Length: 343
Image (tube, rainbow, N blue to C red; front, top):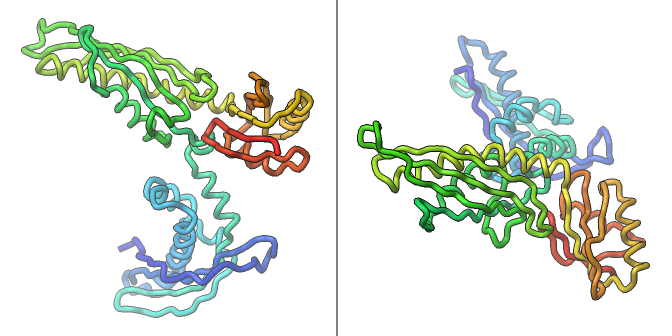
């Protein structure tokens, strides 16, 4: 009974903030209700107002956050945003308040500050999102007792672990980072296992950026597996070894992305070395760029590695397009690769 019930009921548009015209507010109408416990109508009235504010804020959050994100971050959003609704609502007016049986209801029109809310939502992004949101692909060959297998037990286990950490996973051909290697398992023993079989597996994998070929992390782990027959025990050992490798591999990948977020820039229509020199000077004057190196220059195409303080190819593309001195056309971006040309 202590938990209040609420429902958003409408949205009426964007307006300039009355406190600071440089900012905008979303104007929404929402309704909240709370149970009247032991005749405390005044307490229920206050709670229903608070729930109406939470509902107003939740309605605006729903506009700016995808449904998947709402589900995956529902607890964070509730604890960090809607529970502090007064901090994001610039002002409100009570449209109606009334008693409905054992509940008290309140309807309000609220002005929600978009900038404050958007900033808070960005802080709730997962770390992979903050580091460029790379797509992870997997290509792990498996063998049992020296014979190649068509199974993907190790890849599936690693994929699940990376997905749980907030990484995007996809096809290996289109991935920004490819995790490749081997998972080998072999018969261990049947002795003293009461009819069960034991296998021992080793997993050796590396995480490599597809564009630059840069190795971000390498991990080797081994583990055993026990089951009623050879195939099941072999499968269990590979899964256990992959599970053991997943955490250190994920942490090493994140650490590498934090320390050296490098974008491979393929820049076309670079007519002369003077043009290339001017462009590299421009790159190094961008505050978000830590350093840059020309890897190759042939047939008017320069290949440049750009080390970012933060972010990936999408962030760099936005910075390049804002440059007026050397206009650049962006042709393609992935998380860590960027195809562009001088105008």
